[in-house]
Image (cartoon, rainbow, N blue to C red; front, side, top):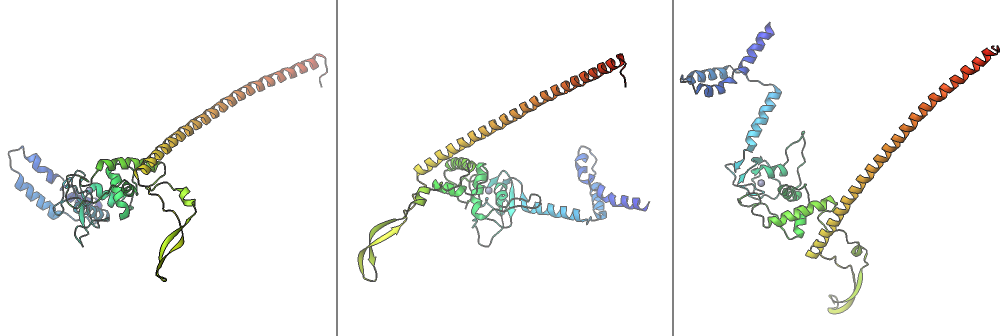
Length: 330
Ligand SMILES: [Zn+2]
């Protein structure tokens, strides 16, 4: 009895606050003005409310407060920010997140380490926790990861370096733009580079050119060169042994060659996949056929066994009949 009374007293303040905020809309259509009464009721309920200090409730309340402090809905940048420090958008469609420590090369004001970033960029720079863990990308990789996220390709940590081989530069915003990354020049070329990079990744290549083994195994070359001798103070001929410099792999011809190579590798990979699939289905078909043949054999063996058994029984019956007929029974 005691416990039920206690329970009802405890649950009363929890149940009652719920209808209080809903009451004004229902009161609207009625001409009677209940607002004074409702206000008084709300004040009374607030006074009676016992604070729930359970750990789960406290944690949930902390989380909600943290969420309210560090996030803003989609729309223009929050009061003390003008744009996303990465993509420069002044008006985010995905909302805003407050970053306690801004990773990457953000240099707005020295000493200011906290700032608002649009949620798309913030989720790449400081990913939210998933099952209590997260991995924060290194600031050297962040640019590449932001490019990958912008073009919707799989996260490639070498994309900025690869774009550099095409003479493209990806910078963080220093002033508000008109949209995400609107300050980056040649976005359409970047998009092309991002798709190329994704196919490179599929064939296991990264930003750099394939290894030039011809160059690697070429022996050093000895030549005669005129050099100034500081001790003698004269210019004289000297034997100089040195490796050839590696050829520049970022020329348009080399890049076109690489694109061709990637294309061929991709084709070969797809062909291999198709062949593997065909081989697997052929193996499955062979196995199914072997199974069918075996089932056939077992069926026939069984019927043969039955016939054999019947014939033996018949023979034995004949044998006994002959014995009986001739009076030779043991
Ligand atoms: Zn952004």
